Length: 69
Image (cartoon, rainbow, N blue to C red; front, side, top):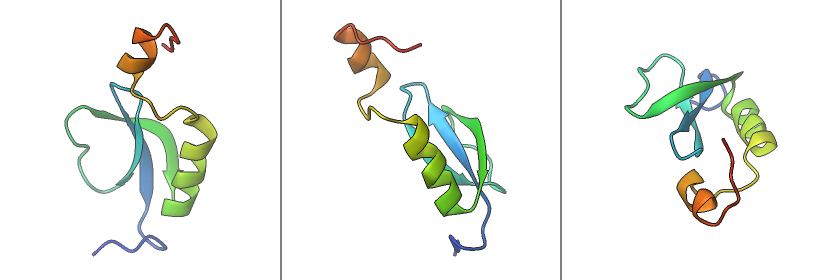
């Protein structure tokens, strides 16, 4: 069982620009890459809030001309 207070996590992002937290000691799931932030679950969630201000998938934002690289 993962303990959010003691387990170390990292922030991951997928090809659609969607963020999540992932246990640091586990292999990343297919399609996800490390974003750089790591720490407790709370620290990672804070980092996600600071970077992810539009939860729509990147493909949808591009469809409506709202870009994002």
